[in-house]
Image (cartoon, rainbow, N blue to C red; front, top):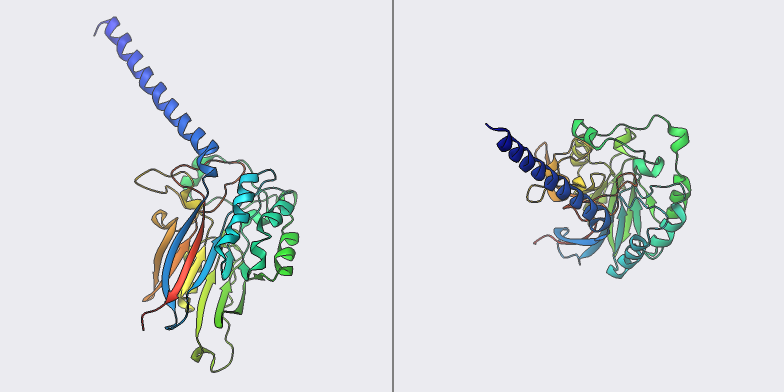
Length: 314
């Protein structure tokens, strides 16, 4: 092969590499500047209510990761009150900055007028740090070690939620009546930090199971052990977040990582979790924000989820 041909082939390879790098850069720029602001409302219908019950609208929020100055996100969050939900479920990671609580509460203020429940995520407790994104391919991200310096004002947020009537389900169970239907909740503190301690569902009186009710389980991170004990405990709906839907996905394929042991094909959407002969609908939200250290989304738009719970066929 003569020198001129070698030079031409090397030049061609250089142009291909340059085009690939440019395409990758363009995709990252699109994800950082455009797609992470394309907030969407995913709507699902689930026939899980007792026969004869009127539909209930459940608004599922997760992974807001608010940073002061995110005006578009705050405006969109406020607009979600227009859905007029019967219940709001917040599955954690609301914060991403030490100064985020006041703007978060302002953005959620219209939704705090509705009944709600919540559980925390790791980024409610601790501020994020910069990480090598390729480490996510080796397994879930590691819990922080420098707890004190990174602690966020989560107590203030929890207090404000509680003062508005939202119920903290961190390793707790509680019942709530909505439109005459008893909703039995169980929830856990963040499984990603290993704080989960399952408390079961409310027991009530000896005749409690004879009254119309629905059992809902709530967690931030959908680790399989958590989904299994929710399912074994009789959950009829499981809600979680944490995965960001993969955050950077491959079009036509989907998520590459879930940041937990959940299979990547379950990292976003409504699927059925199976364990010990039971099947339970599992809704995993792709989340509304991103860590402020990785403000990019690609082929995975931010979302809230509006679940229309309707009666089972009689």
